[in-house]
Image 1 (tube, rainbow, N blue to C red):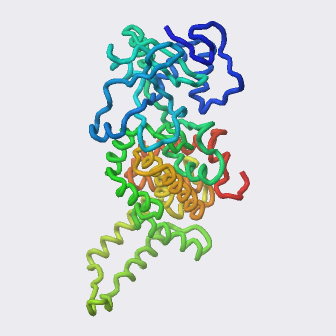
Image 2 (tube, one colour):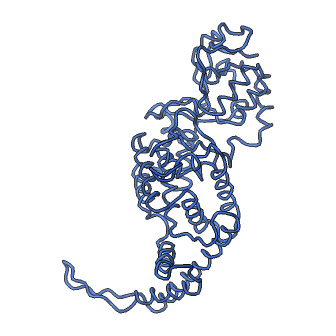
Image 3 (cartoon, rainbow, N blue to C red):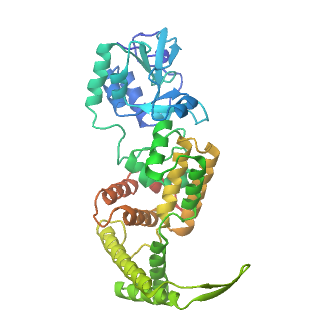
Length: 429
């Protein structure tokens, strides 16, 4: 039914897997595959595969010329372990560093089971050439077995789970810190927090960038990456309201009552109206009229409503442990900076940038975050408030609950970068 691969000598040879030196699996997934293989527990091996994306090589020019499609035929590779042609697939942590071409695309075990045809290679090779490799004949009956394992898995990719690359991704240093700024979304989506790699594959990364961001070109990716890193993507009204409260707290040395905050916002906005201004320009004297009285009242009402929303979100944050008592969010720039960390990964997966460009953007995301915030918890509350102001509409639904779950994972899991990495270089761990 299967063959265990080169690490065990001749294909089909009995006995446990032997490796000359201890092998460090790149992630828990490959460790589980290796352990299942060592026990000859192929049912467990397939269960692990059924919960993961499986990647295969593809021609980037072909994908670009056929948008929305994937190659139907699986490219054969000769493997001496089975003395036959195989379709090679890899778990994510086994992938090499991204290059321009070829690229990797991903599918589930379920998809392979449904689409395998007699014209495809007769063997499925999983992580060939590694200690956790395995080879499965691809007959119709065995594809049905793969389907049974796939049917037992609720979904591919573990949403709400911290995933770490043990090998192949930074776990210390400034790049790791920049990647950790995007960890809330990584945990929510079940991505490796410290990966600068292929994402869910070339096609899926391009599709996601188009769907969520409208990014279909390198130039648009560059524009959005820069706007996120300079905190120009989020609403300036949010920053105005939060910055005003922070100034009031510094001036008066304590808590700022909501009524006082609203009154101060109204005073500041009315002062901005004043009268028309006169400017000297190369074209001569220009008279600039301020907003009308009706527009000013509309702005004031909008900011007052925003202050109410922020106050209610922060009260919920304190009740759920996101904010300590007496603390408040000073800026939601973290919402942009955390997304900038992930935008770098998205751009690399979609090949809108190089690995070097993605790493540079991640480094900047880490730097600007540590300038604006004091701790991972401080950063997290700001990121979540920005996300809620943008998406949640005070429903405290999935947009909030997902981030609350991710926050709790990142502040409690012993492997979390928020517990193993200091927020600022030089701080104690």
